[in-house]
Image (tube, rainbow, N blue to C red; front, side, top):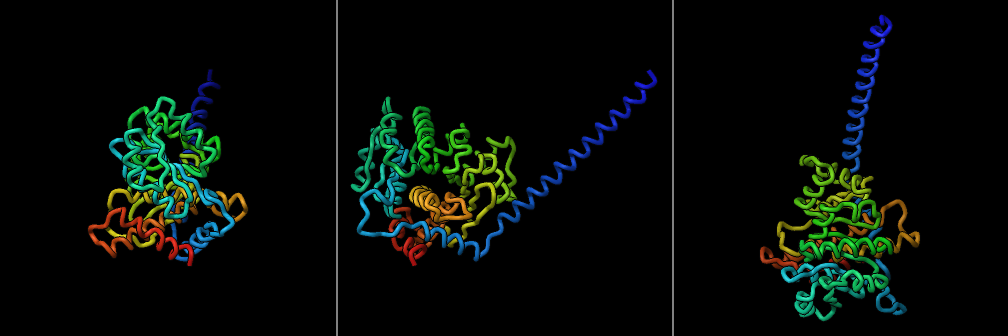
Amino acid sequence: MPQQQIQTPLSFSLIAFALSILAMFIFLNEKVFERYCSLGSSSHRGMDDDIFSLVKSIVPPLTSKKHKGQDGRVGIIGGCQDYTGAPYFAAISALKVGADLSHVFCTKDAATVIKSYSPELIVHPVLDSPNAVEEIEKWLPRLHSLVVGPGLGREESLLKTAKEVIERSKARDIPIVIDADGLWLVTQQPSVIQGYQKGILTPNFMEFTRLFQALHREPMNSSDHPCSVMQLSQTMGNVTLVLKGEQDLISDGSKVYSCSVEGSGRRCGGQGDLLSGSMGVLAHWAHSASAAGGIRGMNPSVVAAFGACSLTRHCNRQAFHRHGRSTTTSDMIQEIGPGFKELFET
C-alpha cells in the first residue's frame, strides 16, 4: 500500500512531462510549418522567368506532319438550361490556346444554344440522359484532358454524373481541371479528386473558403493566404490548387507560387472559364512533356496552372486597354492568340 502511494504521484509526473513534450513538439511543428509557408510563398522575378521558360518548353511545335487532334482534344463537362455561356467560354478558349478539338458534354436543352455560339465546338447533349456516364465514357479514350464544372449547375443528378465521369477519367490517367460547380461537388465529396496528382482545382476566394472549412473544420487564416493554400493542397493529397485573386496563388503542397502578371480591375463573368479551358490544354501539354522527360524538377500541373493564369491575366489587361469598363470575356478571348504569342512564343 505505501509503495502504491509513492508510484501514483510519480505516474502523474511522468504523464505531465510527456504532455509538456508533446505540446512543445506541436508548437515547434506549427512554427516550422508557418516558416515553411513563408519561405514557399516568396516569389521573385527569377523564379517567374524559370516557370515561363518551362511553359514555353511544353508548347508543341506546329508542323505540317501532324494530324488533327494530335495537339489536344479537350472535353468540357458542363452546360445546363440556366448556364450555357460558361462551357462555351471554356471550350472556345481551349481552341484558341491551341487544342485541335473541343467537346462539350451538356444537357439536352443547352446543346442547341451552345452549338449556335460557335460551329467549331463538338456538342454532345447527353449530360442529363439516363445513361449519361456511359455516353460520355465512350469519348474518354479520345480525350487528352477534362474540364469539369463550367455551367454544370448543382442539380443532384448532374453532380452524380460528373462524379462518376471524374472517377472513370482518373482510371484513364487523364488530367482533370475542376472549376465552378465542380468545386461544389468537391466540397461535398473531397475524395472524388483527393490525391489525384493530375488534378487541378481553380477556386475563387469564396469557393476556396468553403473548401477549406469543409476539410479542416475550422476557418482559414485570412491573414496568410499562401499558407492556407499550401495547407489545403496538402490536405487534398497534394492536388494542385489555384486560388484566384489579386495575385493567383498556386501550390501542390510543396511550395507556393504567385502569378503576378498584370491584369486589370475589371472582373466580368466568364474569366474563370477562360482560365479553366486554357488550363485544360496546357495540362495535357505539360504532362505529355513530363512523360517525355521534358520537365524536370517541377510538377507539370503547376507549370500548366502558372501558364494559364499568366495568359488569362494578360488577356484581361489587353482587353481592358481596348475596352475599359465595358470589357467582357468575349473581348478577352479575342486577346488569347496575340497574348499567347507574346508570352510563350517570343
